[in-house]
Image 1: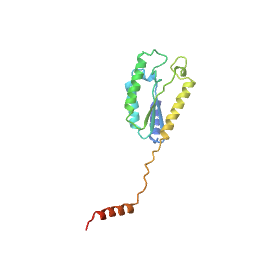
Image 2: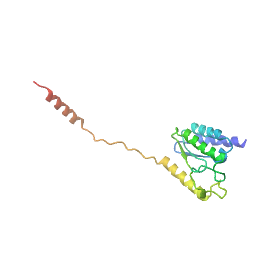
Image 3: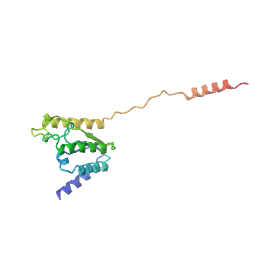
Image 4: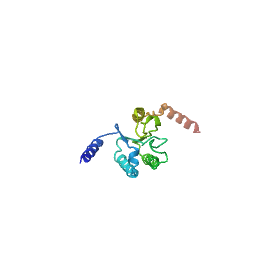
Length: 170
């Protein structure tokens, strides 16, 4: 019952957001590793499709590269699913102009001893990457139009007249 109330409250809040706002969506390898990556991808896709009036930043699951959970062997099926999920996520999100994908390419030293969670250095790095992407969303370069010099229409008219007069023979 509490979950329904929270979800409905969030939906009402998100409906009020505009293009000047940013929503950050973050999932982790635990979400992908429970054999529900197709469902998770569908939920992210539907969320983006239904919220095109706001900027959305989707943080990719664990580090890219090496795109694996540091607490598991690189060849583990969870790590393969993470790589597959990120590839499918990027492929499906490319059609949306309001979506940015933040690759969280971190080093092993930015994780705790067991290798799954971020340490303070990793959290700081993610915060800086988030801030840079948000800045890039709002500091878009303004393209200035090409400025051409104004041509005096009377001068062109007189030139045309002169050229036409010289073609007339008596």
